[in-house]
Length: 102
Image (cartoon, rainbow, N blue to C red):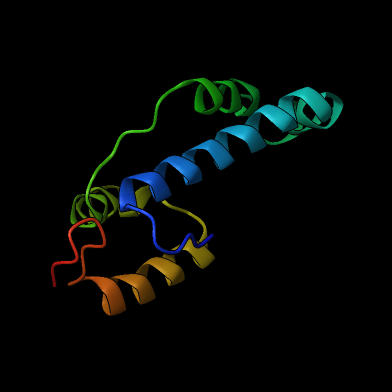
């Protein structure tokens, strides 16, 4: 998602609203599918969707997010995410989009 010529805070608010909308939409329109997902793959899926849909997002810098990811990296089991993290960490590690600092 890209919103040009708006303050970064407004961009983050829009992204948060979009994620919350999608979580709420899934809960409202795909209840049977979400029950299946919950029973088959992840018993906490519905509760986590509700939590994401109703809880304000924490705002942290890019650097803080990378530090958190580095601490829990061993817990992440999805290889595509690890690949993305490694590429992103290499390319964007020195750039903090919240401040524009390099």
